[in-house]
Length: 242
Length: 110
Image (tube, rainbow over all chains, first blue to last red; front, side, top):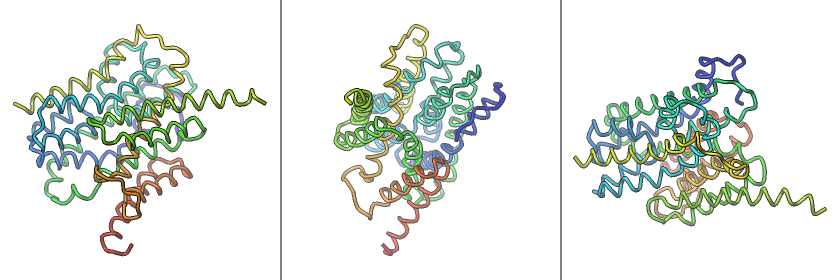
């Protein structure tokens, strides 16, 4: 499905990164539109909405913040919730460390700022491909910039056009994010350890759903990773018994 | 003023989480088992986000029924993704299934 650029150059890698991110953009568009459209009703100002997308740039926690703002939650609780919800990005950045550690700070800083679920899923595949293209960080930049500009545009469109369609927020278009993530997860499920990871993460996520501040998300992720490692050890040990 | 604290604080914690490891990366040396474990990060995190969103659509109770359009569409999306391995197709068919099923429920056809 994903081919390394035939002749790696910064430009070809950048464009390949944009291209690989395109399907995820399709999934993010409705999500961004709804954020923009919903923001006003939660009491966030026009400027605040634009600023949140521009400098926070974290879809899921932006939605949660809207919900909390609407109920008049103290700002510290909102920030704390954001912290917990975005802790998953720590897992992503740790996974990317081997690939970005030799880059200069002028690269690490923006790539860190632009780290999202979508860009992580796309670029980790590129980094893990065996070819030794020296420009894989340009692929990363292409994916990140494409996601970022799309999110800004969709927030703005949601604020302007989205508010003219009062019912739009009840259509459930946020389901686009779920369906995007499904399309990202299924290709991983090619062996038992990955299957175990996914099943356990899903199960624990349900069991811990009622915990505050999306803490269940972190517990479920860690349980899933543990299950994967366990299943890997177990399946490695298996042939030796015969 | 409250808004400035909310957005500033959210931006600060989000950036700190995303960037800290990158900033330290020159000095970090991970062990082999740890790097192996990292491969399980994407499916674990993404599944943990998706499953509750699909089966607890209102955020309060579990809905394992054909009247839950998200569940039906998610199952269809899983099948499309499994057989086609095509992300764009999965998203488009999944969304169409979701909107279509929702419409059928509204009109009382299912």
